Length: 243
Image (tube, rainbow, N blue to C red; front, side):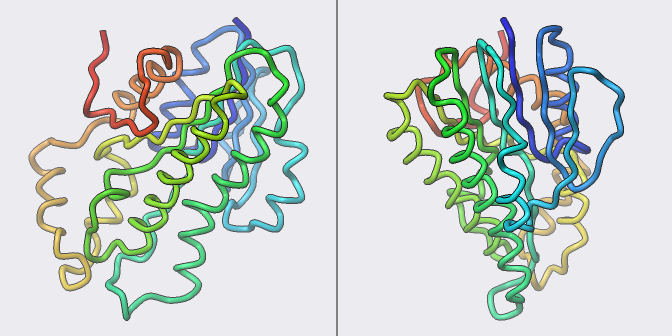
């Protein structure tokens, strides 16, 4: 089976682990999109440096992001994300609000739309996986930007799933759980006055409750290589086990 994977935010954390897992497949072509590059010399991999906060530049470069080919399966994983300003409403900045929405919501919407346009006529399997968050469904004081943008992405995924099922697309909104990444490190640096759940998140790390990026990437891989086992759009890696 010949795969095409388009992956955002691939240079660290979960994105890097997802990239490594899919690179284990022999017949796969991968296009990655991130602000920085790993400078990997892999024939099957094309790294594109792009800041997804710059939507005007993203729009200009859209035609170059979706290669043509006789693929049996095409996958888009919108993984890039930003926690935003960990501050309460009344302490936020317009630039931060805009950046969180651009990266977490608007860029994935634009990429998903372009992905559908590029591969609608493809007869193979077509999958969109938007990395969402449990915070999309649970308000957390201090995370107004993050919760709101991820909630928007989850709803976009649900609408797209209904609209695109007749065209052969599957769409998932996937909560990856709490992962031991740089994002968690940034969260633990927040002020308690801005983020009342700070102590709880510190305990996740201290008590070893954080998942490794590799563990979660394995579940992402399982979901996307066995989509028929997952009928619902909204998924959470904590709710399914690997065989």
